[in-house]
Length: 331
Image 1 (cartoon, rainbow, N blue to C red):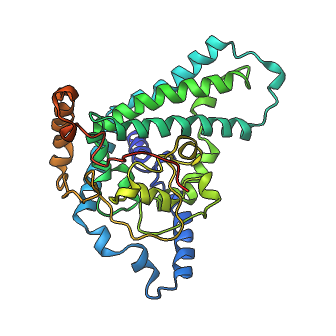
Image 2 (image 1 turned 90 degrees about the horizontal axis):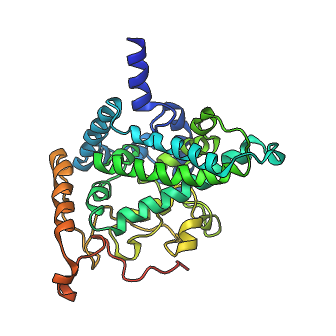
Image 3 (image 1 turned 120 degrees about the vertical axis):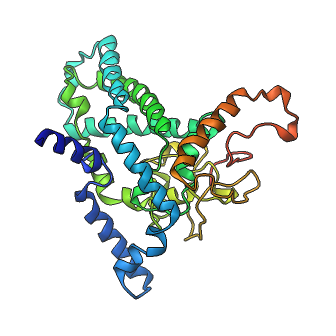
């Protein structure tokens, strides 16, 4: 029974979960700083946890998808994430991993390398889900959130979790394996599976503000390096100028490098949800749990059946409902 309780606790709110209780104080402190700077008055608790958001129908679907995801995780449905460890170990083995003269590299440097490798893979997996017509319907479940709370990070279709875990596992495993093979001569599974202190810091400070109404920008300079909560909120915007921007999780470097960066010059009024190619809001496609689970399957199947050569230019399938005509670096 103790093992079962420990497993449930880890699945719902362990160190790997954004909702781990020890991550929440950092979110609340930063939100309080923002509230003080805005000088809005009233109750801080009421401002941070407004009823209009936390009782919104969209948030109720978030909670239901969170429960579904946790149940599937308990059943071992997403164990493909372990493929990352296997791929990293295989890559290191193939490359030798015996460069002992640089074994004195400190642990924090190895952790930083792991973060860079992981974040690079996350960027591309995220981007592919936006730009592939057959994958977008599964990720659209996340983007159809009309309000955002820390639970919204778990507003995901189970197939998205399964596929992204596998893709991230392969990409992260290979990139980490290549990097580690040049810095560590003896690789242990605990090293590969160990909690990265940089991700702990990310989760404890800004991660939970990304899916909220709290606008926190890092400023023009830092937002070329790190993704701020405000930049991720822009990523969820239904406005045309925000489509397919800011794919990064921790680092903005990949968006800057590959032309998908959007810098927040000032606080912007955002409307969350999905929009069409002209920037018009699409009516909530996932108003219920059943719609969130079933509709993406139908849309993905239709996208796979669709033949681009059979469509006229005006009817050609869009990469995503959020179409960006030409992605250029933000200035």
